[in-house]
Amino acid sequence: MKILYHLTQIQLLIVFFILGVGYGQSDEKRTNITLKYGAERIGKRTDQPMQDWRNYGLGQFIHWGVYAIPGGHWNGKYYAGAAEWIRSWEGMPNEAYDNLYKEFNPKNFNANAWAKQAKELGAKYVIITTKHHDGFCLWPSEYTDYTIANTPYKKDIIGALVEAYDKQGIDVYLYFSIIDWNHFGYKSKLVTDKDRTDYEVFKEFTRNQLIELLTRYPETKGLWFDGTWDAAWKEQASYVYDLDKELREMIPGLIIGSRFRPDDYGNRHFDANGNMMGDYEQGWERKMPNTIEEVHGNDWDCVMTIPENQWGYHSDWRGHVKTSNELIEMLVKAVALDGNFVLNFGPDGLGTIRKEETKLAKQVGEWMKVNSTAIYNCGYLDWEKQDWGYFTTNRITQEKYMVVFNQPISGVYTVKTKKGVSIEKAYLLDNPGLELSIEKTYNNEFLIQYNPENHPEEPFVMVIETNKDQNNSDNQYLQPKI
Image 1 (tube, helix red, strand yellow):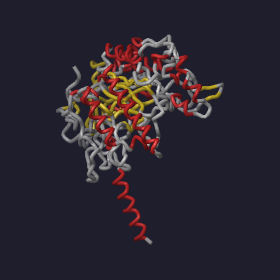
Image 2 (spheres, helix red, strand yellow):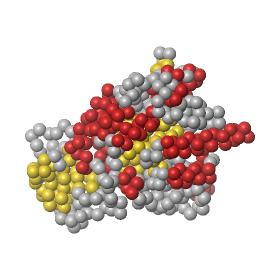
Image 3 (cartoon, helix red, strand yellow):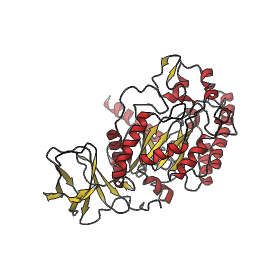
Image 4 (cartoon, helix red, strand yellow):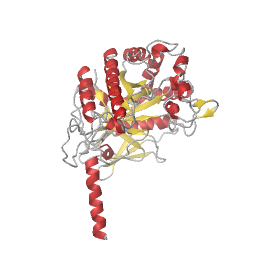
């Protein structure tokens, strides 16, 4: 029985290898399966657009569409799911939802005001929903009538946002859902010959819309795909591979994450050899890694909601709502682990960003005005993490930072460096004239003393200078955006 049991385990492992189950590594091949549509490369992109992406630190996500009109309610009933999914709810008649666009008239929408708020937040890039799973387009697409052009508002939302954010120096990435509940050809799985015939029409429709977006908005720096988990899409490895190449040829340096393409076996994110497909990992949605090993050397970002799971506008936030200090800690943690952090906003049906989001944006922005030096162009420092917070290091200057969230009662901060690296000086980022006491103990351990009478109520940053540069593994990706 034991022999049979172990054989079963081996057989299962072989299946897992073939299907790429449980792997997320771009720097270590686990198998050697021959793939036509696997990873484009092993390792990180090193071109300037990707270097810019890597150094953003903080981004903004905008989820907006006709789902903002019901705002998580219909006929007096509360919808507990994510607001942008309300059409899929049994309490929301599809016909009623599909006619909401006739009411969509966001009179308070001001693209310049949104972009200014994002600038004050400290965001370096924005991801904007061009259309969500319902298929409603915030641009006047030529390939469907279900667009902003046929609403009372009529004007191009995406065009206004691209222009406004571009003026603020914030790079624009366009969200696009492959799922389209409004198109007859969309199928979640292909069962019949008719399904396959209809889906061919849908594929061409999808291609046309993507080409249309990049043609209309050539300022676009990248595409952020959603809704690629359906069995039907995962069968289209060859088609999506060619489409990916076509889109990249339209805009040199275009950045596309790991959600878009399936490999030969229908794997997403990582192919059957365990190698990442796309330019960065998109698997960190409303969750974060805890160690650098968990990201396997990949570029990555975390997209995060303020309440527990609301992307589009829901008038009734329930459950835990994150504070500014929680969001700042997530931001710093992401950067400390070589990632970016993207904070979501869901404007209401009139185009107003809700007061809770505005308040948090202001609080995070005020912190960023003082401490963004420890965020922009920064990444992982391979020193042992301590309980007081996180290290970050500037990829260009090699300057090192301690971002403190948990202040020791003793006022003593432990720092363990690498062999031969000595801390020569430590001071506060916002008060460089206040030099802090440093004591060396043993095994490259240093104690920094800082115990103010009134402990800061927000995270703060210390700058530490060493006897020599401590090069990071990412030093080949140094040049900042000019």
